Image (cartoon, rainbow, N blue to C red; front, side):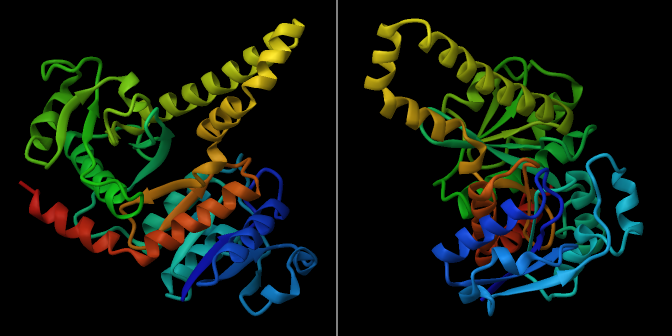
Amino acid sequence: MVKIAIDAMGGDDGAKPIIDGLVLAMKNNNNFNAIVVSDHDELDFYIPKKFNNRIEILKCNDVISMSDQATEALKRKESSAYMAIDLVKNSKADAYVSAGHSGASMSLATLKIGRIKGVSRPAIATIMPTVTGTSLVLDVGANVDCDANNLKEFAIMGQVYASEVLGIDEPLVGLLSNGEESSKGNDTTKEAFKLCENIPNFMGNVEGNDIFNGTCDVVVCDGFVGNIMLKAAEGVADTITTIIKQNLRRSLISITGAVLMRKVFKKLKLKVDYAEYGGAPLLGIKAPVIIAHGKSNSKAIKNAIFQAIKASDSNLNAIIENRLATYKD
């Protein structure tokens, strides 16, 4: 049975949505247990008694806040993030889930759990909605500066994750650039293009719109570009939602149309809601690490836990290691 270590203290709204999400996950999946690391003494109040035998609570004395430096994380041994990562390192848990400081989680996971053989840098991947399903984009923030070999590794890791965890058959991989032609891009992406050409289902350069139109399953970029893209996409989704709401209130005809299209709006909301996708996996680490959004609600945490379980039950790391060795040169 899979055991998940959960940092219950990192989220913007404290421990309650984390615990609520854990309870939701347990109601829908009987095949995992959890160790919850928290500085609260009253968590039992939120946990139904029937799950007491599946949830262990570990008390911590420190919390790494969003304003803290990630470099401090290794010194903060009493923090919820450090203690939860330590459980995975010492094989007391199989995977880690946190809605806390992503930099701290990444640093702790990389230095304490360690990287998969052949991985020079781990990458944060995020699931983005498309017109046909989803795409996986990496890196979205772990590595601001990347070389061509890093991007090649991201392509391989992303392709394996899309296949083994997301269930995408023979995922297509694209390298994010400012044009489809092989001559486009900067020096790093041009070199990465050449390195990726022998990877199966590599479709070459893709542009920003390919992230959302369903033509590509895995999109590769450095963390600087990826993080800006992610924040821009979140901003566009929020803006469109606000514009629709503002215009719907302006006339009776608009309100009537909205009522008639409520199913369409509901499906649209599900498509752009980050909670539907859970969290972002940190690929390249020896154990599953899922980093959820700081403002995650219970649904988002539930789905982040499900991602961690699925990754734990897969041969993800072994396949990544083998694939990196196969396409090393």
